[in-house]
Structure formats: structure tokens, C-alpha cells
Length: 339
Image (cartoon, rainbow, N blue to C red; front, side):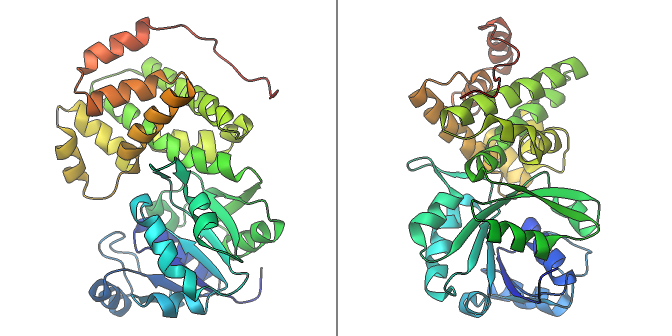
């Protein structure tokens, strides 16, 4: 366990709140920054985040605030846990307040559409004199605050970042594994959201276990194929940030992306599905971004293409499903560990 540190978690959603609570329980003074000052004051007074994690009392070491400078300027480590659409803007706001040599960690599972930029790449572009990492894995916030045993992955090419994050997050119910393939870990977190939509849709239309097993396995193959083309290590996808996160989000209605798929399978429009969920589901935007990048690179991703056609081209599900089953029959396992 490290000495007591000051930590900021930027983003008052469910995951940001859960991570902040783990850190606070571990004895570190923790700022949880929320954009809305009224909401932050209400949460600080009630010791609860009723919008995202109602009913869970937060540790006394957490200070909830809308004052970004207060939260960041004193912090040794800053976690950024905001939607991908806000990530660059928040990073730019943070830049003037960061301590020299601070550690900045992204927990956001998304991709910025312009130039296909991952969140840690945004950190590299917008910040200087900081150490960067990515936290990702099969981590539902509700189960984290219930102290269900959970594993996650810290990815960084800096050993000091890995050790620090393992120290401040490790607890009897939360274990953090190390990985040097930051790009692969981050891609895994973003890509699995697409397949969670696919899986939710499949279950909603009555698909059996055979179909679900096939979808999960072929999803993993697509993820590895795409990541390999982009320079990540396909073996990363056999870990918690790959297959672990994929299994979690593709088999549970705690996943917002899975619920989007369920709603689509029940005949609702994309607009109705998004409105019904009421929170950001990163997978919808990721489908569009990854489809365009896969086409540009010539990477075969039939599930992504099929989901794109359903979401944005209004192609009937039955027609897309038939096309997937009658399409090219590829090899089952495509990677032998050789580049």
C-alpha cells in the first residue's frame, strides 16, 4: 500500500463514483468532480450519488465538488471518467492545474471519431510532463460498490504508473493486473461495446445458446483481427480487458450497450432505445467509427458491418442475419502469436 495520496476522479457517473469510493476506502483523500455544481453539493451533503448509484453510502474520504481547479491542483493522480465526446474538452480544462509529473489515467471506453483517436492518445496530445495509463476491464460499477470480487487492468509503458495504480486500488474485493499494451487494452474496452449491442439484440429476438456462443467467439476474432492491424497485441484480447470485458458486457443487462441491443430487438428505433436507456452508450458511436476505419484498412469485420447496416442503414435484421450466415467462411483461429 502506498502512502496516503490525494486523488481526483473526474466524472460523476457510475464508474467514476465506484472508483473514487474504492480509493477513498483505501485511505486516500479523494475528490470526485461533477460538472453540475448543484448536483455535486447535493451529493456531498447526502454522501450518495442518487442519479447513478442510488442507495450506496460513499466513504467520508470523498469530497464531491464542481471546482475543477480544487480537485486537480492538489492531486497526485487524476482519473478521467467522462464520456468520450467530452474527454478532450475536460483534458484541456485540466491541463493548467496538473502537478508536474502527475499520473493521469483514462477509464473511458470510447474512440474519438476524428483521426480514430483513443483516449490515452488525447492525453498525449493535450498534456505534457505527465505519466499516462489506462484502466479497463470487466467492471460494472454497481457490483464494485457492492464489493463483489472484481478484476481490472492497468496498462502503461511506465512501471511506476502501474505500481501506483495497483497500490491505490487494490483491496480484498478489487484486484488490478498489469499490461504494457496500452493500445490493445484501450481498444478492447472500446470494441466490446459494439458486440454488446449485437448480443443484446440476438437475445431479444430469441437466439439460443448456440448462437450466443458463436457471436461471442466471432466477436473476439474480429476484435483481435482489427487490433492486430492497428499494431496492438492480439494476445491482449485473451485477458480481462479483452475476453473478460467482452463476456461481461455481452451477457448482462447491466450493460447499457446490451440494453440498447435488447431494445432494438424488441422493435424500437435507435432513438427510442437511446432515450429509454437514459445514459451514454458508447457502442452506438463506436459502431460508426470502427466500420469506417475497418473499411479504410480493409479489415474483414462482418459483425460490425451488420450492426452498422441495422443501426444506420435501416436494413432488416433478418436480411443482415442471413447475410452473416451465408458469407465468407473464415478460419476459426487466426493468430499463432506471430506478427
